[in-house]
Image (spheres, one colour):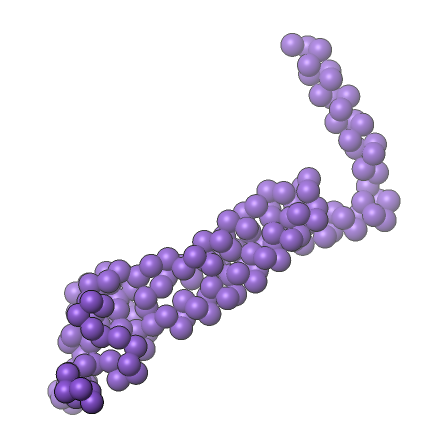
Length: 168
């Protein structure tokens, strides 16, 4: 783990930018022996980025961006849970898409070297998508097997709605 020289937060070893404040982690990259980890590149410029992932001046001070797939995953997971009680197949589709996008988003965040954030949102999308899809699948099975009489349930709700309208 690397400590950020600006905010002292912990970052992954391969990160080039602090995930908290966006500062360059290679500016003060000194090993335990006291010698610098920087080396000369082929073009003669000094860089602490031994993997060629970008340590140009334009990268300095860049804040981590939130991964779009993580956001989409969380939104689809929430939609899946909300729709799981009334729109079974739509909730299942949203839940499965939320799970897939969350997994891909987490992998991209890990591979970004600190340039992307949103791991928690992706995880929330995976969990909520699984919950919404599971509730929907169980509900669809219960309705399809006849344990829940959907027609009677809708008729009862319509009667209650009509009684509420009559009272107004």
